[in-house]
Image (cartoon, rainbow, N blue to C red):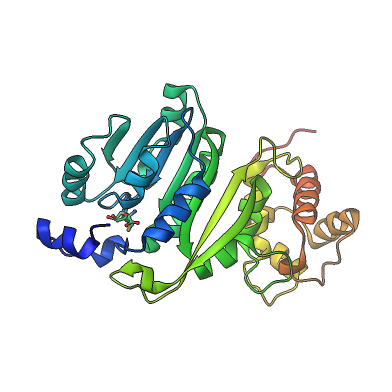
Length: 290
Ligand code: SAH
């Protein structure tokens, strides 16, 4: 494998830290990520942050179509040269956070597989963007900072269990595949990385009567991690029209002790609590007749 150092020198460019550029140099890791992505001839694959195409090249031969998204114009130019031989690769210069997965999915009449060595500075926004477009995406294989992966896969009670864990696990089966040492990148990042694979479910783990309301309840429950659930809910803006007694009765109905901390609630408990609170909450700012 031509080393990234060589490619960068050949094209006379320096890695841009602000764009989270940390290129994979270990061919074994590149192969393992491509394998985990399980791209098949019928698949439309979208790659996040293609760089100068190490992973792109590896996946290009397996996928029916590979859409490589890269924000950096200098790298896009390199990608176009380096990958010119692959007819089924399309290169998009775009910000992945503005990338319309749903439009592409409709265009190809197929749910997308997403893969990428995700730029570290936008890892959480990327995960939330995928979640927002989940109906257009079947699976994702992502390399992320180890800490971010911890937050995504943690079970209740774990110190890394939080809003991202609940929101992602509600909609996806997520599995940590393997860790990747900082020595596998150029330039070498300060943190370790892990690769995860996820499959979006067609339905959330538990039926939700109001998805946006659920998100706000989960955020409120974790607003102050050390506080009791009841107190966090009492200060939640989304519940401003509910009295303490009403919140308490929703907790009772859900069978959840308000003295617990949000971080101990399972996904099912969050869903149940949110559905019950929703059924009791007055629509805020509206005049209710009768
Ligand atoms: N896949 C390559 C590069 C990974 S580094 C490899 O593994 O070697 C992350 C890449 O994401 C960089 O090329 C960076 O320019 C690109 N990037 C950063 N922010 C981006 C954004 N908002 N949208 C798309 N690409 C982005």
